[in-house]
Image (cartoon, rainbow, N blue to C red; front, side, top):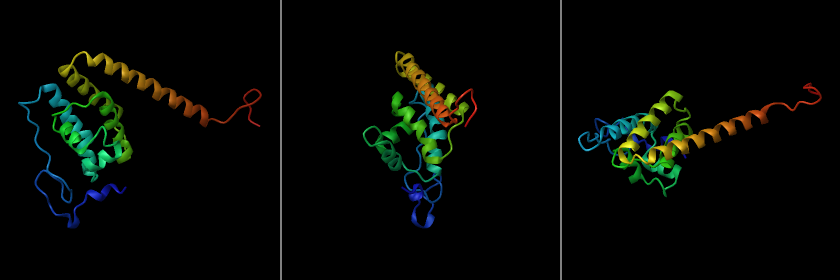
Length: 168
């Protein structure tokens, strides 16, 4: 798929909030009175590091939905997450964060990823406090798996040594 396919023919301006040449509606302003402060902070950060970043590359909700699979991420679901109407479940959150480097080619910094994670946990806490320890447990397991995978890759990339560590 060519991710620049979201460009409108001729690059016509579609409104003040939307970059020139992009397809789709302008992003709605968040309803700060309807959203609790924790969710508002999370959604603003998610928009910045995920939705705005992908949109600047011409990637639409439909593109994201196709990439992640429509079962969990319809364009409508993505729109509801971006507007703060829906807080993603743990697996949805992790899939969204993992998608940035896959589509843009540049991962989030560790600091940005950790900041977003803390904002997400605060929003989850406000929604349902009993989910926080479970989500933290799931993330810890994912971290161990990533480290194990990295160690395996490193071990497999080193040359095989024989007889006292001297290569033949």
